[in-house]
Image 1: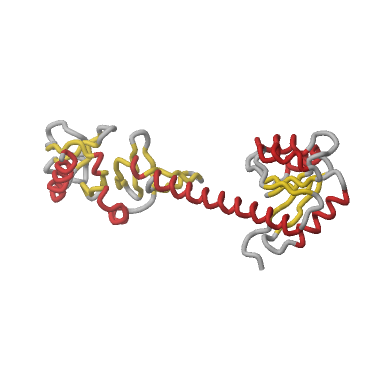
Image 2: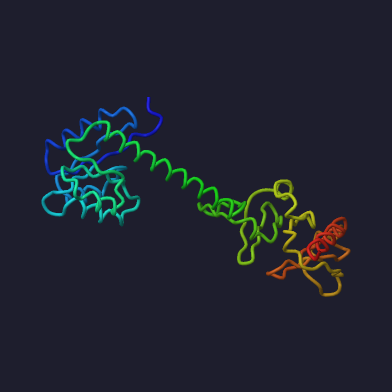
Length: 274
C-alpha cells in the first residue's frame, strides 16, 4: 500500500526499445511508486499529448529527430504546472545545458535502476515541498485576510472580510450586513453574531451590532428635533425615546442606541480616542 499517489511519468524517446526498457525500470521501482501514463517518440508528439494531459515527470531523451529534448524542456518552462524533467541520454556532453534548464537529474544510458530510483525520489521530494509551500501560503493568505462572513446570495457564495463590516442590523426576519460600499441580506441572529464576534463589535440596540472601530460619534437626537430617522424609528419608543444615536464611519448613517447601551458606547469611543 502506497501512502503517496503514484508519480505520473511521460517517456519521450525516439527508440522504441529504449522506451520499453525505461517503462520496465519505472515499474520495477518500489519507492517512490511511479507509473508510466504515456510514451512519445518525438518532442512534437510529447507536446501534443501535453496539451490535453498532465504528468509529474518527463523522462526525456536529448537527441531526437525534429525538435530535440533540450528544446522541449525549454518550451516546458512556460507551462504551469510545470512537470519535472529528467534527461535520459547516451551523451553526457549536454549535462550542463540540461541543468541550466532546471532538470532534476541527468541519467546516462544504459540507465541503472538505482540511479532512476534516486531521480524519482528527488521528483517526489520536490512535489512534496511544493505542496507544503502551497499549504503554508494558503494559511498565510487566510491569516492575512482575517475572519470572513460567508453570505449566500442567489446561488453565489460571497466572502465578506469581517474587517470591512460596519454593522449588522436586524430587519424583519433577516439581517442586513453593511460595508462602506454595499449592503447584503443574510440569515442569522444578532445574538449569535454577538457571541461569535467577541470584542470587535458592540450591541448598541436590540436590532443593531456595530463594529467598535466604526463608531464615530454619540449624540442625543430628540424625536422632535428633526434628527435621524433611526433615532425616532417607529416601534422603538420604549428604548429609543431618549433619542441617543451613534454615527457610523464612512457611510455617515445614524443608528439608535438603547438607554442601557449608552455607557458602553461612550466607553468604546473613549477607548478609540485613547
